[in-house]
Picture 1 (cartoon, rainbow, N blue to C red):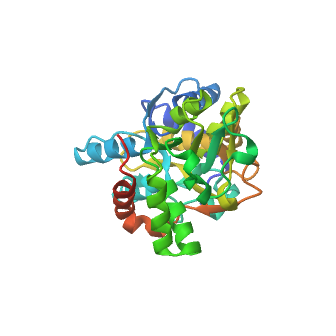
Picture 2: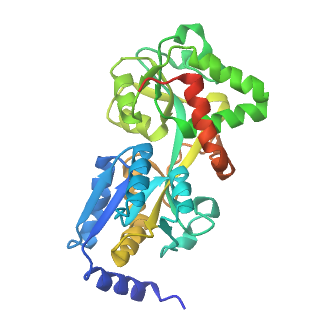
Picture 3: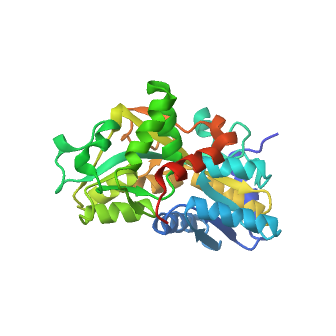
Length: 322
């Protein structure tokens, strides 16, 4: 029988007093993670949280290496669903249904109860409004192939989620060969390679290049709120998306504290903190409206078995500078 919420919370708090704090691995920016930790510590000031931040790709590499050495000590992770799927296969995550699990729609949760989405990552084209006016901004995938953009398009060196979702959309619409041909032509546009979407957003705002092909909406919205001359555009009326989700590890020692922090992340308080950073929370009663007018293209779990092939295809096609 499930305990009433208040009693469950009390047991978690009492159990956490016998533990050593919390180790949290995430791809969330240090600034956003600090805001969440600060809000959590308003409720639980005695709990110390050690946060390790890296890109999702590098963090997964570290997690798998630590797991092989029996040295993976993180209690909780916040990563994109792709990386979490790999962790599930390696039996590195534990099942856990959060306190407010029922509030979240099914598409925001793992069917096996291994994770719940925190926020939606949504990839859009973006541009510097001092260099590109609204009418001249790209509005379709094909627009990125215009000769005027040669040498002027920025892209992250590892945009695998964007690549998979966009390629599959183009395959369904135009056919396999046409979709592959499109990606080859885009690769021939002399892409400006940079590592990290935050960096790309900063450099674009500074005028280093006029457009980016796959920035996240929240990156642009945050820069706009700070007065940067940037805006985003939706290509062909569709937006590739995936979720960044929270999950409790199967190897962590601080199980009560993990559950307490997990429940906080998915609470109204945690979600309001996430929304304050201009991200798009998955919680229906605390979300942002940026995506409502558009068709969303979700990351499909069915591609997981072939994901390495997609990574190889991207690298072979684009040959990104590292």
